[in-house]
Length: 109
Image (cartoon, rainbow, N blue to C red; front, side):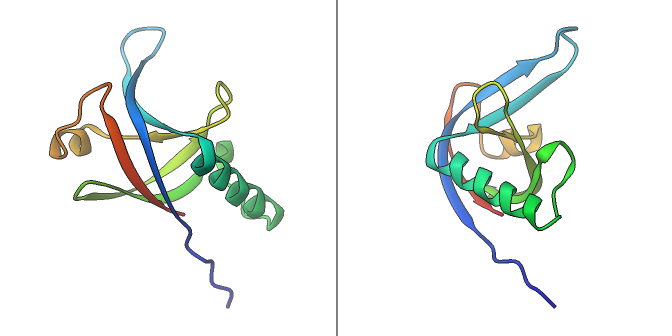
């Protein structure tokens, strides 16, 4: 049995809000870019070469913001070359986060 190694990535980014064209949907994200984004891109490439790529090029991650830990996926951003980490309302509420806040996140990939 092959066991995948867990990579730990720490990144600080600004929490931002995306609203769909219809104005109905609102999502909050942290863009993972720079060295952290490059590390995620490297992991995604390895998964693809191993035949373990996921839909939309996403990567499953375990994220920690403050005292909150949650399972989610990060998605590649074609706009800026980084990765998008969605941050649910419950996490924003529990960690007292608002749009524009600088947030440190620990990712385990």
